[in-house]
Image 1 (cartoon, rainbow, N blue to C red):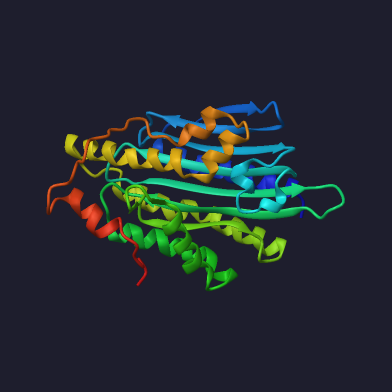
Image 2: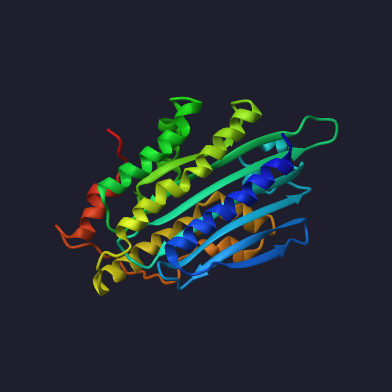
Length: 299
């Protein structure tokens, strides 16, 4: 297996996901190809003010460099200073309807090289769901689809990656999860290369069956200004996480990546309030009490 084969899969994945999302939305994604002066480039597929998506993007990037950025070397200090190569697909979708959740998915391949030494490689990725108004059946469906993708590679992977997701997508300064989680993994090379690559392919191909049924079920639910206002408030949490904690955002900025593509994940409109609390017993309060908690959704 070569890096070229992985790259071709990621390009095909981007195209397949965009095709499915265009059928859902009714509006075509814009295509923006770019090159990185330090090496590499990518293709950004972006939608704004669509029929369903208020903003979203499905990005492919393939970049390389000669000195591993701090955000990537943090967990592997012995690799600092090596030349590196990173490629992957990353998407964030922000529907307009507050009853339809924001979703994130990312799959990536990373390798480092040093003269006279074997390359060091690993995969990373996952997907997570961020509802504004929670539906238990959506959370169960999303998690079951993630579990089904991982089970052929080991029954221990879903509970491990689910816990990793819960811990990673957690706003420490707010002491609350970003959403209802999903799966997350990084620095993954415990299986042989072919098996690790096959696992990542399964996870990537699970995104559409995990998300589209939820989008289809919720896209026509009626909403008003109250729901939109709460959506804008909760989107602020998304911004806080991406700018403060997200490893991919930090790596992209530190490695001289394309800022427009890196910050594509930001929602189009956001509201912050001072010490706001939802009304007791309200649907907004239910998000906090029943969904923004660490929970086994498949129990």
